[in-house]
Amino acid sequence: MDPNNPSADVIQLTLPNRVEYLGVARLLVSGVANRMGFSYEDIEDIKLAVGEACTNAVEHAYEQEDGTKSLHLECRVYEDQLVIEVADQGKGFSVESAKKQATPLYSGIDQEDLEEGGLGLYLIHALMDEVVFHTDAGVSVSMTKYLRRDGVAGDDRTISKNQI
Image (cartoon, rainbow, N blue to C red; front, top):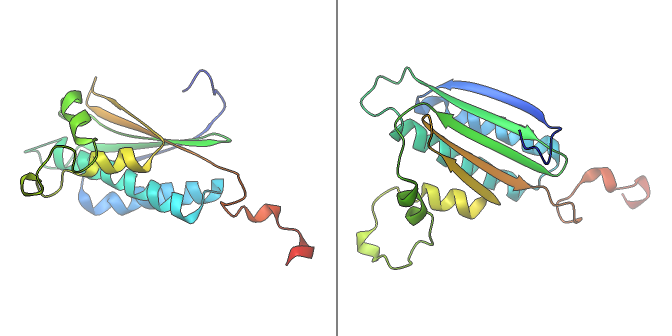
């Protein structure tokens, strides 16, 4: 919990670490973000970032194991932000390597040298406002998206009956 922002609703989900359950994770964050009032575009960005984080966990966390390990998803709902953490207890990775993968797509890389996949960390960083990786016990990625209430997001609670 963030000591600077202590009051949050917390929604937790534990899934089998198998690709066929990734849609459930995307549905959860979509529902939470929709309820908070995020725009359609922001919801799609959040779903894509969470999908990438979960896919990375499924593909890399428990290599050469039978998929019986779990994937944990936690959403912390604040008044002005959604913090989503995806965690596993699998094999960690180099934070330095992750930083390189989070850079813009073509910065110093020949197009021929790009591997299939490998864009997940870049997408997560590009789509979310803040991203933090922890590799203590397993791997967790904490992703924050701020709710912008500037009138563009389409908060229907601000429409009066006279405007319809």
